[in-house]
Image (cartoon, rainbow, N blue to C red; front, side):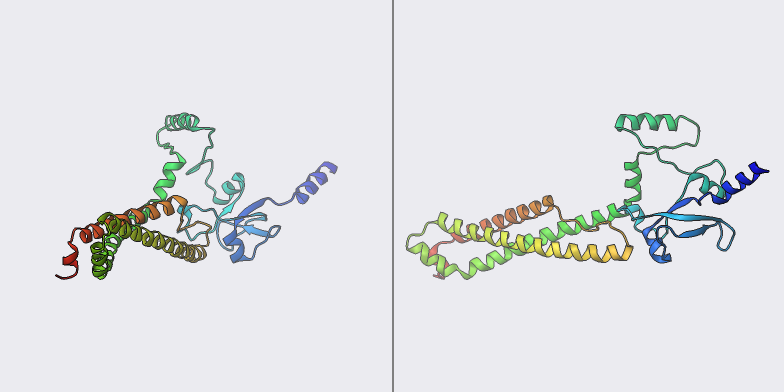
Length: 267
């Protein structure tokens, strides 16, 4: 009789199991660490009383951005009894030490039985991020078109500026200014304009990137950064702008210095 009472007391005083919920679910349901909730397979059905042991922040994972679902993590035996799925799983993850161990694990799992298929996490991330890769290619195409259009626009602006200074350059040429000096001055001016334009473009891009991240991070409730400006992007943009500016300046200057001074004066 005493043993039965002790067993009953132990069962009665056993603390409930714990689960972990994501921050979105905690905010929507008003849950905090230590709250007791009932976990059941169907709404309103009888279930197990558990304690919220942790609140998980959402990861910066592209595959989870468009999923409008709440995540709950629990012990495996809890999940088995809840969904009544038996000793079966749809997916499981295996951590390995290095790339060679990953290859060994892939071969072992794929050769274990028919129907098993193992994939490296990098390939799974690439497949789930296919939408983002399509958007990235679309943005790259827009960038190429913008660069070509801006190069043509820059060349036209420099040609117009040179045309406005025809008489000044003609007068300088008549008093002995060399062609190389005119060429260097126009190219230097184009380089300065390109650098200043690049700096302004970087500031505009940085501000636009911040606005994009603020909007979509709040919309999807995720820490994922949708727009990133890196040092490599800035260096590429400044270098490309400088090269295009020098090329446009050189073309405009060559057109100017190859014209005789009297022709520039309209005679």
